[in-house]
Every structure is written in C-alpha cells, then in structure tokens.
Length: 164
Image (tube, rainbow, N blue to C red; front, side):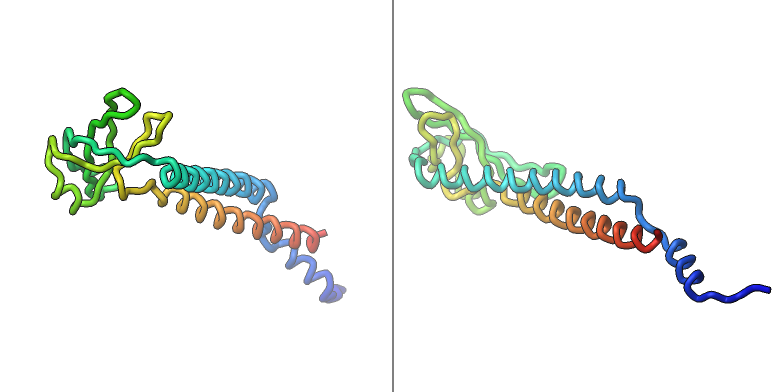
C-alpha cells in the first residue's frame, strides 16, 4: 500500500525546479565586470581630458582646410572639419566634428577657433567636447549585466541549498 507523504512531495518539486548552473552566473559576472571596467575607464579618461582642456588649453586661431559630411555606421550625419594651426613653432593639423550650424558658418581657408594642449599635438575645436556616449553605454550595460549575474548566482545558491 502506498502512503502519501507531503514532505517527500515538496522535496521532489524543489528538485525538479530548474536551477541555473553556477558557471552561467559566474561567466556573466565576469562579462559584466569587464563592461563596467571599460565604462569607468572611458569615463575617467573623458573627465581627465575635459579637465586638461579646461586648465591647460590654449586658444589658437586655425585655418579650415576642408569641410566634409558623412554618415558613419551609426547612420547619423557627421560634420567634419580639418584645420591647420601653428603652435610651438610647428605647423600642425587636426580634425574635429562640429554642429551643422557651425559647419554652415565655416568656409574653407577661413578661420576657426581651437584649443591646443601645449606639450602635445592634441587639439580640438573650441566649444566641442569629447564623446560621452561610450562611457555611459558601457557603464549601464556593465551595471545591468553584473546585477543580473549576481541575482542568478544568488538564485542558484538559494535553490541549490533547498535541493540538498
């Protein structure tokens, strides 16, 4: 004769509940931490560069060599300007992106204001800033992936204890 035992039935149900393998959570934790590290590193580089231009940037008048429009893989229209300037006794060239309004107001062989970092060959068009999207995207992705993987690891540990 079979006896009904609710305890053994509950144990059987817990064991049949799918438990994600621990390696799955740990793998995604590693990937999330890599994305987070890239995002934080890119953000630190962005802040450092902005601070350098704000502190040491020297305004210089440059000459516009070429103006061009293009659509990179992202599909949005980009307005590029190539310019030449003289700094530290050398003729140097640079390239930068501008807004459509700035691009329309510029003429080839006309003047453009840039910021030059002394001791380097780095320059950028005055009023422009670096790309902030890359650090933001990588930081958000890294945070979400890391949080999800930690939740998966926690779920695995909780369910693995109950299955014993």
